[in-house]
Image 1 (tube, rainbow, N blue to C red):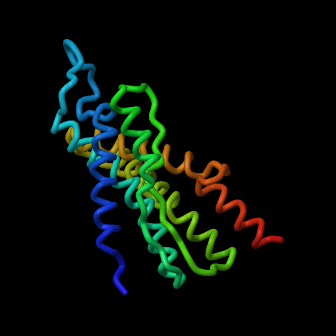
Image 2 (cartoon, one colour; image 1 turned 180 degrees about the vertical axis):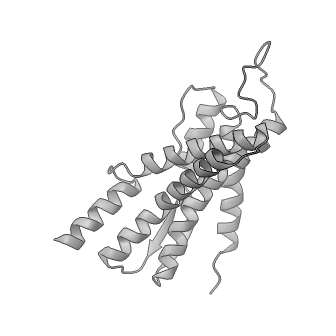
Length: 188
């Protein structure tokens, strides 16, 4: 059995490119205001920078759900949720000041215990928590960082903190609701 199907790899590539595009207008390497008018053309440099800063938190979040489920002997497959990704792209195109992003999910099949469900649901937010703590630690402890490195670490820290908090809200279909419901089943 392979860890990834061709469709999953294709979905992960599409997700990564879409996340980079969506965040390219919101995340820029320069945190300083730009002079003159706002460019409406595609900026390859900002796309690559936004992809570098934002995509790992989203991709690793989903992959950690998949690998935790696989570790428990469950079947797990990453899928793009095209309506959620489409809404985010639409909001980017109309230059909305806020984003709603629900780009994908891991479809898990098989029977799991409540404890396995807690670990599987919490695996994604845990990765975001680790990335937030790691980036913040490096940012606060490193002696010599270039401006670019400091900006990457700062934005990585902020994005992953947001992803952790947002995903732990106990409202379906967010991970927080799955954690809470599984804990209730485990206790009662």
